Image (tube, rainbow, N blue to C red; front, side):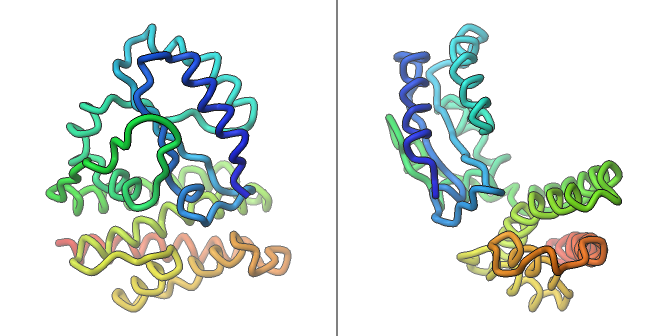
Length: 238
């Protein structure tokens, strides 16, 4: 299901464009974890560069433009030093990268990366609040448009499920292995009705046909659950 040949082609083009400045290309997220869903999942790539000057980034632009025409997002660009300095404020992202990743070319820069946890709790609350506000903002643009509502729901659920996993970590519990487990454990811990989360995961994984689901009713329950979960996690972390 993961377009391996296309990814390999992109990595080869990056090598040719960046030359010695390219230190590593790493695949992370669902494509590395084994739960990639072509219709909904992104191909997440981290490119580690020796330096990130205007000229260095401009040299990669034609290659990334080709990648965009294949309907994929640009990779993240960082230096190795920047990763080590930023690990404390990007603890969620780097913990998840280290959990599931594959080195496609170059150095394994994640293996030795230490992720400080001193700001993790604050980042969990910040991300929950930010994504709740963004969900409302995007709903303004799609309300009443069934297909666009579904797209918004199905694209947002992985982020909220991931933050649920990190909420468990922040409260001292062992991390959940999968999104569904994180949602179920968090529902038990908080006493909240997170059935809308589970229904969305069912639709996303094609276990349930969305044609038989009332999207407005589901969105109503989902938004309510997101708001209550954010408040509950905030209270738990306090």
